Image (tube, rainbow, N blue to C red; front, side, top):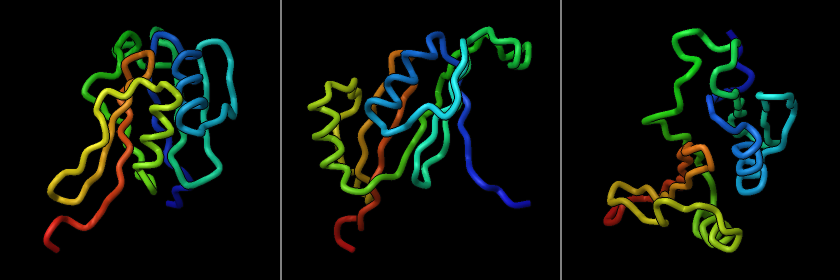
Amino acid sequence: MNITTTTVSLTVDDVEASSGFFTTHLGFREALADEGFASLTRDDAAADVVLLRRGSEVLPENLRHQRPAGVIVAFTVTDIAAESDRLVREGANITMELRQEPWGEKLLQLTDPNGVVIQLVEWVAPAGT
């Protein structure tokens, strides 16, 4: 098997709102879009994101009406402090401000208009190592 990319598929109520959030604040662009569907990509190594409108018939029947719950879409970035500053300036919905964990993780969380939680992470050496 040769995996060429990773794609996260999210079921949301308002595809356009989530697409706008990902393109405005996270640097994605729409590769494909139609009513109730958007495929988002970046020119770097990030995972692609597919947005499907909740209730879409392409989803398995038992999952069609579920919303993302308990899922955090995490992206590892460089210079997270600069990204945090940029997102604040842009007015992004930051739901966990930038912080550093003792095990060497700097992170912040955003939430898109459909409640999708996105976490930006930068790994640093833990204090004392």
